[in-house]
Image 1 (cartoon, one colour):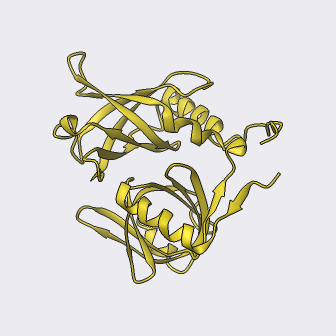
Image 2: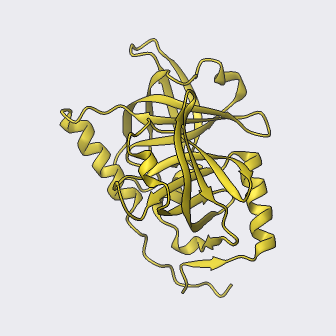
Length: 236
């Protein structure tokens, strides 16, 4: 069974257009250089290039990615994958921006072989603003997640209290996950969707000296990136 199925150029163009309108979530994994994944939101398609607003903190090494190829995953109705070189990478007052070459074709990942990150798409996350027990709780839909942060969708009414720079506690459980997760986090990016929802990108604020939180992050990483066993076909 193949892991991913190519789609044609016309389907690719339509998929990317929809992904930009809806603020699709992006995971960028450099094939060389810093061994760190980057989360972001797809913002624009200009001059045969895709612009990604990164949701994590800025990295000094970001410009070093220019000219290097990256493996890219994109979440929409399905999960899409492609490989592209980085054309530009820089920091702005509103956050880091990554520009990659627009792919001619995408591959869609077969659902039977999704990694566990796909399971997080339908999960919920509770955001507690404030450090005391009287902090307000906001329920959100988890869109994607890594060991270092997450992206979620909140209702427009809740967006006013969740601005970039806001510190909060993010609590969530994943289907078949090893444990409940709870991390301090800071909102790094906010983007409005076409239906007036609000996508938040946030980075976990975990102290390396906090062994309990670090162990929780390691458990999350191991769970997310462990491939599930292939399922037997059902004749479809």
